[in-house]
Length: 223
Ligand code: E4P
Image (cartoon, rainbow, N blue to C red; front, side, top):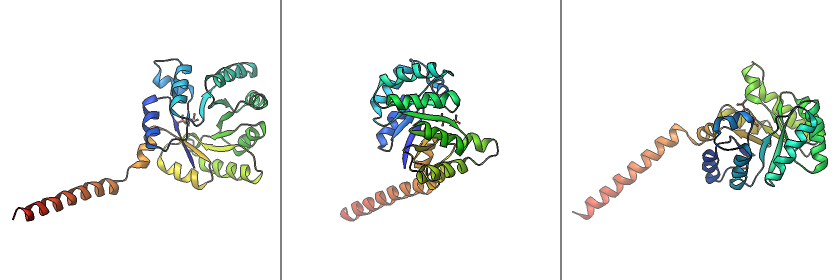
């Protein structure tokens, strides 16, 4: 399973890239607004230098021509840019035109398997159902991941299911078991995946036992 970072924060991206586990990055206008300090273009170019995998850049226009203009601009910033387009009638038309131009897209704001099926047919390479936002309104986000993953594999579409709006580590495990090809995670969830209290306790104990053993050996040599 591929793991992406859901952030526009360069330091977070450098950190997880250094762990050797980072396959791509997703950004959106909200994530960009949290970092600021440089233009969206400049941040995207910096991210693309760190991460060779897909880096999603989101359009904000709501008409087809506007989406095409923004997406073509992003696609010129780096070879690994994927244009993020919201699910809508205009979004579907834009994704289908991007496909004809050879520009990869990530269909965002998917909340049903049917929306994902439409995006796959329109040629989106990534399909992003939002698990956490569905859970937030008392629906079962993981059901969409399971249904859509099954449809994509059954009909052998080229698209990949990207589990988005991940809130905690269990969402990652459940996305993998439900068949998602990718999950995009906030930095905090990456950190939570690393940690376990028994791992921390074990590291402290091994260090202490090692030091005790060396001290005992040194004492014996000094006899
Ligand atoms: C990723 O592509 C999405 O934009 C992101 O996961 C949304 O997450 P949120 O629901 O926490 O804003």
